[in-house]
View (cartoon, rainbow, N blue to C red):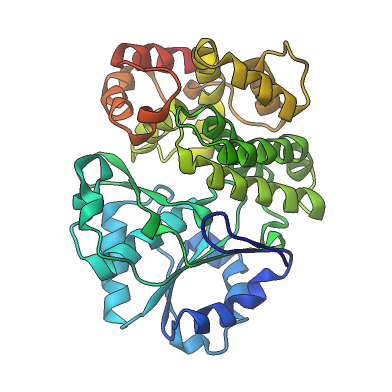
Length: 375
């Protein structure tokens, strides 16, 4: 099993989850707090993971993670963590349990309230540390297991991105076996999340050639294998490649993301709609590719090369074609968003952390028009 150490150690291969007991011992975690969601627990996948533990009675399980993790859920989980005298966090699932688990690990050591750690308000200087953290992804999309950030929908209506090197898990255990049989729509949505991460990371304004290289490699893997993974959930090669693309996307976006994520975060905070982050990214991506192209056309050439496309290919049209082939919506309107929500979403997109690294400046007026186009 190769060890990837670009940011944090990542144990990656089929069967890697069997290394969890060793990881717990190495990090000194005797009473782990397992953060997951009810869907994963009901599917029996959680049992497959807990079965490898030496003593399941020592573990506390929190399965109340919502689709878009909220500050209220973080508070509830933290109370369970503290009430059961836990000494470390194990995140199991997709991006939502990962993000919620990171927030719990932060508050368990540094204390609340969570909002004080907003990096745009200088909150990183208040971070004292986090509880020992291990991440086990069961989808191939967010890459949060190898990311310095997490995203929480706050009680005041904001969706905040927290980013700090201390938020990296001590170890990520990436076992593609855990993604076998993932439903086609979830495979498509999470896979497009990974592809969007790779693309936006390459296009992001900071200069970081190693991160660009990782993003381009992840894009190649994701573009070549996403449709295979959607069409055949038991395709082990496709599952391995999509999980690698997901991890590489997160390794790459250490340099930043862009307007796709800003718009997705602003829409994803609308609690009544419960929109899936990866699906939002997939639907919004073509609009932003058209918007950004004149600011970084040289990078578009490299994206086309990584995707195996002709030098004059229309990237936005290629993404739209792929979305259609794997069954994703063609516009935000199909997801339940309407133009009357644009005024509410725009200020949140403008103030999102990802806007800062978009390759082209985006104004409030731009975002309003981009939402209309993406409808």
